[in-house]
Amino acid sequence: MRLLTYKDIKFFQSDLLRENNFIHAFFTKRSKKNEPRELQNQLNLFSNIHYAQQVHSDKVIKVNNTLNLKPKIADSLITKERYQSLWIYTADCVPILIADRKTRNVAACHSGLRGIKKQIISKTLKRLEGMGSKKNNLIVAIGPSIKGDKYQVEKKDVENLIIRLTGKSLGGKSLCINKIKEEEMIPLFKKDSDPNKILIDIQAAAILQLFKEGIKQHQINLNRICTYSNPELFNSYRRDKTNLRQWSCIYS
Picture 1 (cartoon, helix red, strand yellow):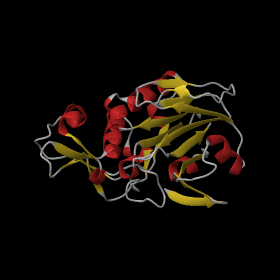
Picture 2 (cartoon, one colour):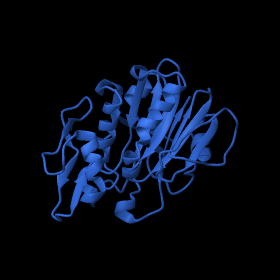
Picture 3 (cartoon, one colour):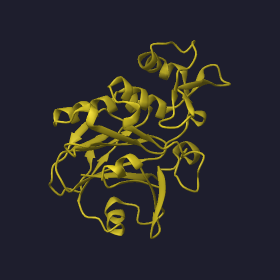
Picture 4 (cartoon, helix red, strand yellow):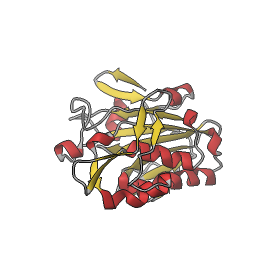
């Protein structure tokens, strides 16, 4: 992914989505004019804006072409209508933008650890299939989030998830996946100095969930910049206990 600047707005874009002509952005932090309408206006774009009141759920909402600025209570938005934009906000969780190269259906998914455990990604893909998408036509961009070496959790909170994703227990060796289109290996989890805790990589977990749904490595574009470790670019709840977030969006 590449970091772009337009006026005073800094945002990342996925090469995979750009190559297929999908307007989108993973925004960095801003102290002013940091709402979807303001960001859209500053980028000289036009659409019906849709965003969610995110609650770490498995709820996926299909939106239509009606202008409605009231947030939907959900963690994933999908649409098949043209001239819509779907917006999600994150600060350590994983922002995921999905697009269908053939139908032009799009989705924006907010997925933290709780969302991955509730299979929000899998349920988003199933809803897209229900709108006519085929999985082999989907492309997926995964934006910046917290890296595994900064994300400590209770072992008991992730044991079942790790077994479901890998078929192996915590006592075994961590499954590593290749960084998408690059050489870095991403371990799903690492041991922590506290025996009751573990370090887990939620991007790796999200990718494994995509793999289980039949999405291939060449369909995924990944940004491995860590929100926790880059305070000049990102808000991070784990680092600062802040309620500030950064937005991500995709246009149909």
